[in-house]
Length: 301
Image 1 (spheres, one colour):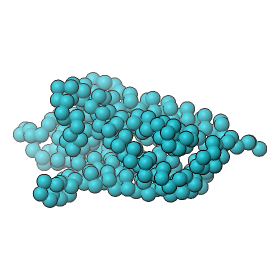
Image 2 (image 1 turned 90 degrees about the vertical axis):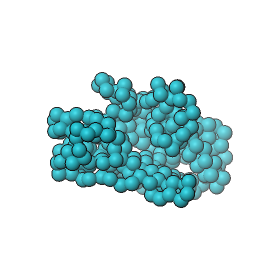
Image 3 (image 1 turned 180 degrees about the vertical axis):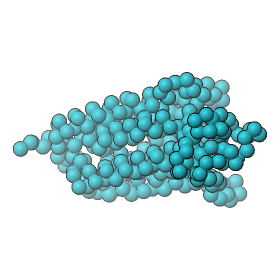
Image 4 (image 1 turned 60 degrees about the horizontal axis):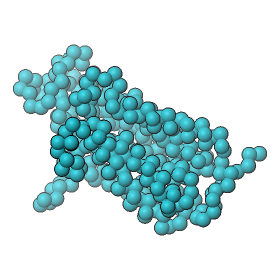
C-alpha cells in the first residue's frame, strides 16, 4: 500500500431503536440550517418581508431533495428504477444528483418569484446561490463520511484508502484492476489510495461561497440581476467538469464515454452562468424598493 490516509469512519453516528442518525444526514441538515440563517440576514439587509424566508426555505428544501432524487433516477440509473419503482421513494438508500437539484432550484425560483416575491427571478436566485455553495460543500463532506463518490488511484500523499468504499483498486497506480468488494484476490492491505474528490469539490465550493459572500456584502453584487447566480453556476459546474476527470464512473454506462454524464449535464449550466454574468454587467445595477415596488434601472453616470 502506498503512503496514504486510511479512511474508515462509520457512516452511522448513532442508533436509537429503529432510528439511525447518519453523518451524511446530519451534515446535510446542518448545511441547510446555516444556509437559512445566512439567507435570513440577506433578506433583512434587502428589507424583504419576514414571511418570505420561511416559505422560500420550505419550498427550496423540498425542491432540492426531490429534484436531486429524480435527477439520479432519470440521469444515472433509469434502467434499474423503471423495474423497481418503489425504490424511487427510498432516498435513505442513497442516490442524489446535484444537476437535478439545480434544475429544481431554478424552477422553484421562477414559481416563488412569480407568486411570492413578485420580483425578477434572479433577485431570489442571487441570494439563494450564496448559501447554496456552502450547502454543496457540506454535502460533499457528507459523501466523504459515506466513503462514496471518490476518485481513481493516485500516488499523491493525500490519497485516501476508502476501506468502506464499494469500488476498490488493486495493482499499481498506472496499471490497476477495479473490483467490487468482496474480492479475495486482493486483500485490503494492497488496496490503492484514491483521489479524495469529495474534498476537492468541497474546497472549490467553499472558495466560491467565500467569493460570493464578499461580492454580496462588500461589492453590492446583489444589485446586478443574475450576477451571483451566474458566478455560482459557472464556478460550481466548471469545478465539476474538471474534477469529474478524476472520479470513478457513477454508472456502468459511463465506462466508454469520453465525457461522463455529470460533465455533459454541467455544460448547459456553465453556458447559462456565463450568459448571466455578461448580461447582468451589461445591464448594470437595479434599485429594489421591497417589498411591493418593482425594481428600477439605475442610471449610469
